[in-house]
Length: 454
Image (cartoon, rainbow, N blue to C red; front, side, top):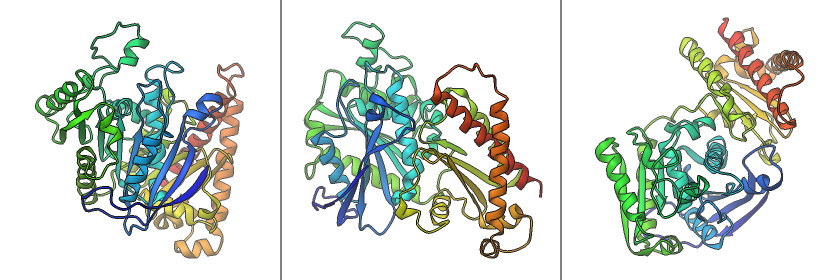
């Protein structure tokens, strides 16, 4: 992962917003754990962060175009747009994803969902406002963003609730089944299909706010598809926050190639959309996240295990008032962020709203290590003796009880793993996922037992 600072070019857009003196860029960050070969190259992202702004900034996860068969976050047009937005005080995550024919639908949609999961897990650490997380993209990327917005299954399987998304921007995206998906399914071109791979199939009133943008000289029917989908969401589904913007004098290519120009109508519409929805979200509490988020794809998404454990933790929260969150990360925090003991976990738990009356358990796959944050108001209960969080920390009591608790959870998970049949299907990665799943389940059950028994 490479980091660098760029001096900002101030003056992209004329809409008032926060300016950043510099832009910090992190490149080629993996957002899935255990990848190798082509998948390891494809499932990476770049982070463009404004430096010098005084308040947490909105964050947009952006997907490139290329017909689902090409394109890259590294193209000059994509990097230029990301830099310009960061210079204006908006964080951008440029994410790559696997392409067809190496994968077929819904593989690239699942990749996009995991990139968003990575963003939700790291937003607070990056300095972004977790209430102001947006998804967007151009062309095929706009299609992916819209699919995530209207079909909640993809984000849910990655551990992200729809409520965590502040808004979605599609720049000339396809609203019917993408032509590459049609080709994968052997359907002749030209043609229009509306099925499980079409945003048009999902008319939801509870989808995140949507901004659909197209050019007046866009590809055939692209303008009409977007206009129709916006009308269907608004008039049939009664969605309260859908907007369609037609940009004059724009083709399918120039609607993005001119996106970084000062005063570009499409960019102005996006900035207005992000600004308005950020302000609306800041008047409310941070939306409740899923109890379990697997940002690195460490566990099998189709197993149903996350959903079952999430329900268990939701029921415990309703009965006890204690919120337990679990996050699975592929990488440990950078050394500079983890220098002071406890500071990283305190900051992470504060960003998730559990620093005082909640619990945050985090797994770091690269070190095969678990860390647990016990909220200050729960420390005495967890330790089993009176005293403030500060007193129990300084005496070493909380550390000792945590270590004993983690050791007991590991022992239970090892015993459960040893009891599994030896001929279970899957490769080494599947076996590792089973081990992590059993460890996570032992921790969850142990926390519920320990905190619910008082």
